Amino acid sequence: MLRRFCCFTAVNSSPSTTATTTALSLNLTSRKKRLVFLGSPQVSASVLDALFNASSAPDSLFEVAAIVTQPPSERNRGRKVSPSPVAQHAMDKGFPSDLIWTPVKAGEEAFLFQFKALEPELCITAAYGNILPTKFLKIPSLGTVNIHPSLLPLYRGAAPVQRALQDGVKETGVSLAYTVRQLDAGPVIAYEKVEIDDQIKAPDLLELLFARGSKLLIHELPSILEGSARAKAQVQDESKATLAPKITQEESWLSFDQEAIVLHNKVRAFAGWPGTRAKVSVQDPRSGQHNIIELKIITTRVCGSNKIQGGEADDVFFTQGSLVFPCGGGTALEVLEIQLPGKKVVNAAAFWNGLRGQKLKKL
Image 1 (tube, rainbow, N blue to C red):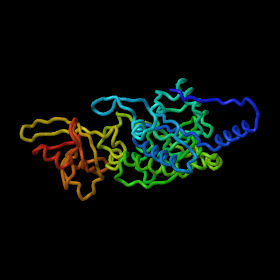
Image 2: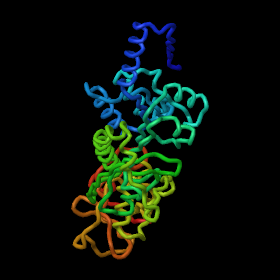
Image 3: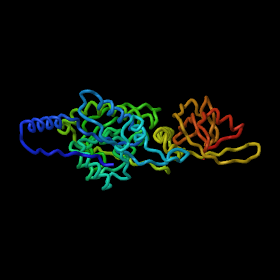
Image 4: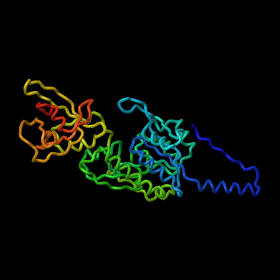
């Protein structure tokens, strides 16, 4: 639906008409600026909440005029078609459904016509998941600002948190930057650094970074809305730029010829989706039979040297509540939680007890 706009025309220049025109002009100059929010997954909801709360303050300079998000899609095992988490959250908050827009692509002419008719002054994006074309970026007068979960210019792209964890970095952060046509390359308004715990997984780190990003955004919004943020924004150093390409399903397999720390970081990085998988051989010493099964590796840690036992190089053993997988370079990986296809997540002890004396070997 398109919003309706009324146009008023003065028919004479009487004092009363002049006073009315002046009052109308003052009202237009003092009105709140129209902000459009773009986001899709659950982590974006914290940003939207922060904007809702800030816009409801008596001295607020803006209003959330519309929300743009991904179209409804099939979710979970039931394959039920559902709105994006951001769309659902907005509707739960009572936001008008006709102002929640779900274009397949942000370059659609019908959507751009609707978007331009709204006359937005500022757009905020947070994990929207769609490329914004030049036609879109030219519409908001104050530009488009993105919350990006990395310390730009590091980890530009679709999977900054996952790739940072996979690389085993000890520090990351969140950046507030203007959006330009080149991927995540716009001037940085502000950033905040965050230390990374060696056990934190991607979903938790994402949630933390977007929560920090929400606070950073609200702090910087006054300068963004008055236009002074443009002058202080820092151009990114292209020589330091790194990329964080989208993760693929094929990357989820673990190779135990790599060192344990590499595998542990991958498990943390790929937690949630696509997860990490490994194939193992279950051998029955009584019958001589063996079956190959697939395990989803949920939680791990690098094994201390005091837990590494002797035996064959491909033997997986159980000790102190964990399955120990020999890895490259004389290292070992402790697996604390696993999941069989179609089953619930269980701890290592429950899985080991279910083997009933059978041996486990890595492949």
